[in-house]
Image (cartoon, rainbow, N blue to C red; front, side, top):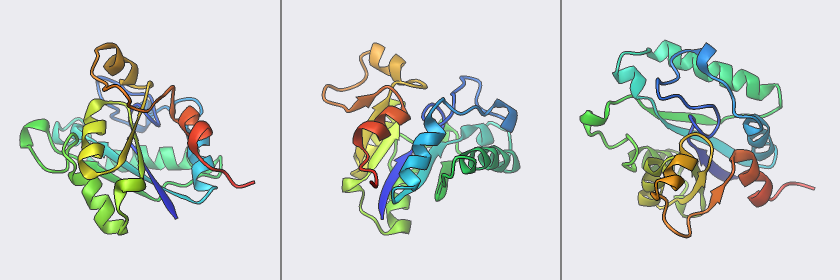
Length: 180
């Protein structure tokens, strides 16, 4: 089974500078749930790797995070898609943990737990922190313009040659081999 790792905020759902703090604030980016469905229906294992420092900032708790993820999974199920696992870092940047992106700890944990080397795994993010973590873990980084992606491009932060797509749906449509 092939694996694809996705960031959450800015890739699957609309991002917010004020954090996604409740299920009511979680809104899928148009086409993202259908893209995940296409992946899962074509033999891909879908794993999310997401920084969630709102927990460390006491903006929401683990129960609320679980409720946000339940909303995401429920909406995805309406299309027939599945998310196989969600990994998250609840820490503040000042904690300097190994799991908070841009450090590769979360990706390394995914690789270890699933016993899958990341050298052939596409990892989709919307920020250079995602890309740096993916690269350090040996994965194949992909940037989307949704979320903070376009801003990162406009600021000149994205290296030349980085695969960039308009959104998750475009990445899936242009790169994923689907069953006939």
